[in-house]
Image (cartoon, rainbow, N blue to C red; front, side, top):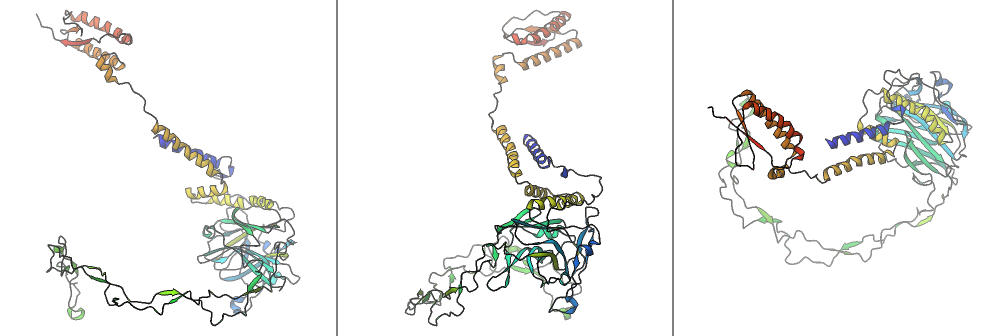
Length: 582
């Protein structure tokens, strides 16, 4: 019981810590769906795109009318449907978003930035939120930062339109991706190459299947470092100079494409010993196992009883036709006579390994005297080598943001696109947009949040709580150890007082009870006499009349009870006897 109380107190304390000073976690019982509040746009933002009305599809966006090259005309056109509307699963009233409405079609939409990105600042942050309202099995939700060009026509935006950065989630089947790709120009050849970031470690499946709004953030810095966040939790960090495939800087040397392996080059490390001969006593025909000649048949072995017998209770089916189906054979069951026997049927000696077995002989392998190692072409200087010390500042200028997607799912909502040069400004914008959505969705979720999800979410948001919870959980363990391991208190042995006849607290109760019982008996029988005999005296006291005995006993009983603590003398015992009538 003590342990349970400690656990309840500690869990209550831990819950109080997790929810203290956080008014957002207080339930809003009976309240209406919160209304959309226009966020504050950060100063000097390259792009801050959110939506206020259905007309924004034409006022803020440009839907592509392009066609894909090299494919059938029926699927070449970018005819996917976009809409600016309040998503049907929105937990906030009048919160409009860009929604992809059609399946199995090419979709492309874009918007121009308020000013071009020249990658000349200390920091660049790209951020937006996505919600797969119906989940997704195959489709993308990534964005592209389109490279600036005098010929850039957003109405013809397609998969071939040059981009500088591609970023965002993508899924098909069991493969979940979180893209970060940048295109870098080789200064020697003028050819652009795609550099793919390594796969993030955290599991991404829940972000595609939980049907909640998730925030995706990319941070680039002038020191070439980068960070990726999901729901403001860092999932990857690295450097543009490494951690990409292929690497941003090519190798200094490459294999000589014209070098060929010499015809006499021997890569065999070991060869067969051609001088080896099979020993004369090598018997290749000897079996691997032989019968154990020392084995003896167990006593009680039933040689004449088969292990399986026809089931005597089985009968042919009623519709069995002997002419059509043939002779019916009863199914077999284990022979009950073999249940208690060591075995049934013909006995055979068990097999044991053959000590003379050697198997097929083959010549041993010996080191190859002509071994030269594994051949590799010689290295030559890479004619396309260059060293880019600052790839961030060499990225191509960006003038627009676009979404060019193929999806087998619809009802994908996009909102709160932001490109700024400050992570702090992006976080403040997220608190006014995504964080509000997250809390509204949590309160609107009819399913109670599981304990595991709550713990995981709390840990992700407040990692320092692990220390506090650890201390709180240690407290009951220490209390339990103190409680169970403390030395037992020394109780006074009442029986020892009885042996010495010393007056003890329980003597007072028993003595008082004896007096009460005696008084009741005297009241019931007017002819009974009470005689007190001292333990240390051998003479009997004279009997008194019943009336006087009652008076004396009633007067002496309280006196003895009140003064029992101060009387160390021998205890007086009473006994009753019925007086003989004259």
